[in-house]
Amino acid sequence: MKVEALEYGDRKVFTVSAFNRGVADWLSRLPTIWVEGEVTELKRQDRWQTVFFTLKDPSDGACLRVTIGRGRFDALKLGLENGRRVHVFGRPELFEAKGDFSLRALSIEHFGLGDHLAALERLKTKLAAEGLFERKRALPRFPRLVGVVTGNDAAAKRDILTAIQTRFPPARVLVAETYVQGPYAAAAIVDAMSELCKAEDLEVIVVARGGGSFEDLLPFSDERLVRAVASCRVPVVSAVGHEQDTPLCDLAADVRASTPSVAARLVVPDADELLERLDRARAGLTRGARRTVERDRERLDRTRERLGRAPALAVERRSARLEHAAARLRALAPHATLERGYAIVRAGDTIVRTGDQVAAGTRVDVELAEGGFGARVEDVT
Amino acid sequence: MTFESAQKELEEIVQRLETGQAPLDETVRLWERGEELYKFCREQLDAAHGRIEELARRQEPA
Image (cartoon, each protein chain N blue to C red):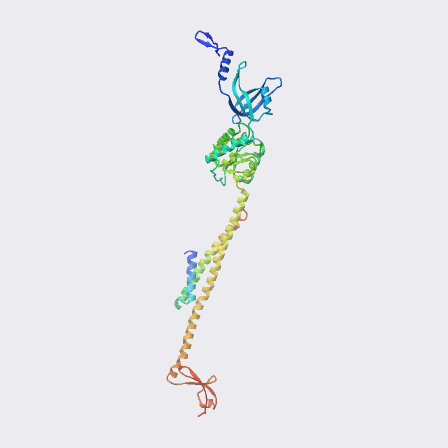
């Protein structure tokens, strides 16, 4: 189609109508394509020829006007409502009379939960392959400054603040309130995290959000957010949704907590419990020291007792040895005589020195230099 | 002299006296040395004990 221009000297000027017609003509040559987005501002009236709605990009809120013939729209029987995610097949179009740009839809399909899950699964596989879910850092034991990213609605925030401050009063908490659902949430949370990281002594971040629908939690599976969590300067605890939800940021976080108050228990120790343990250790220290001294004292006492007895013992031992030697000396004296052939005769215990000590038939014992023998007296001379 | 070295020497002296290894004229001298070592060890222990009890008392009101 030829577009006529007016000539003013060397300036070429189009009428609005001609310009619109020209753009419309150029747009009509673009191919038909699929566009994905969320339905908002849906307007359908029985007396209108056309149904209007706006398609919104859930990640950044970018908008696109969509038009579709009412007959065609009704025939699709979509039961479409605001907030639904759809794929729209159509081509760009300019409504010449108004200069309104829109996507002229030929078909619309629901992009359902299953599709979301499939997309999430693909993203998860991709990020896992990059090793984004591998790195797990240990949380600081006694953090001085804890960053909390949370929605401005009170419940989760209050839970976590109370839990942190009652458990471990020395910790300061820096709260970054942000969107936690909707199209701006992912980017806002990423910003909030990097804002918190500017605090130099920040040691850990908790990302907290209460439960919600699958769609509500989608920002926490957003690729940008998941990457930000994985590459965060400090360890991140993710406390998003309930136990059964596993948004991807849970996988990228260093620690996952099932609820915000569990997250609080994970990031700070219980000061009361610490003090109690310290007290027990101190008591043990005193007990141990006392026991050591006690043991040394007992040992020393025993040694001293032995020392006290030792000199007497030494003297006694010597005198016993002396006695023994003397006894042997005494015993040895008669032996020399016997050696020369003499014998000692005993009647009972008495040594027989004279004949009248015995009578015929008296039993006597005779001791020789070597051994001896028993005998009976024949007669007395 | 440390507590441990004194304790060790004392125990060696007792051992020598008890087994009768020491000459008689040395016995008395050894015994005196033993008593001296005992006194030293005892003082060390009492000092340690006193210090422990003092610290324990001090921590109780905490």
